[in-house]
Image (cartoon, rainbow, N blue to C red; front, side, top):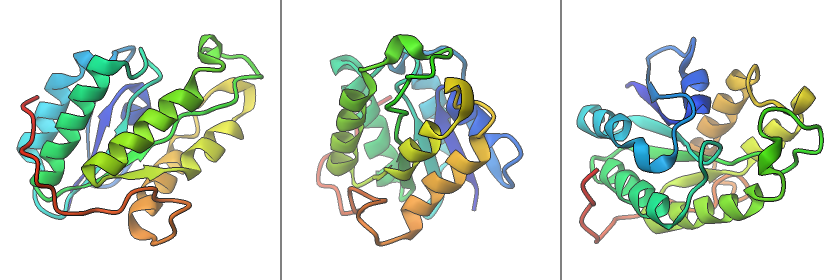
Length: 176
């Protein structure tokens, strides 16, 4: 079964070198502009497939982005896919390319946790810790560890890793 990596440039990096990976991601794209990437994953996903979502570094998750991301994840869950949302780095004290986001990502992570709870996805808490151990304030170069942590969130019953458990959804999916 394939694993889809969907979202921003972090998703692209996580898909590199992963066996059976299909990556639908782009550089420097805010959530509202990711629709065609999610459409591709939604069209291809089959029951039991895995989808790892990275969103937030490029533009954050405002109200429009939250509604769209929620709709896309619901559509993936309705197709029977397991979805893991990657948590964002919360400490940018070392600077780096994302230093302008210092102080903003805890609120974005809270939004992503809420989306996970609403959709039956998991929120990969551990990815925050992984990202915070990266030298020079960068997440790039540590994709394999972030990918492994996000996938582990789907397979463990530990609520410290998975903030929301999959459940049957009664809400019809929103169109991407």
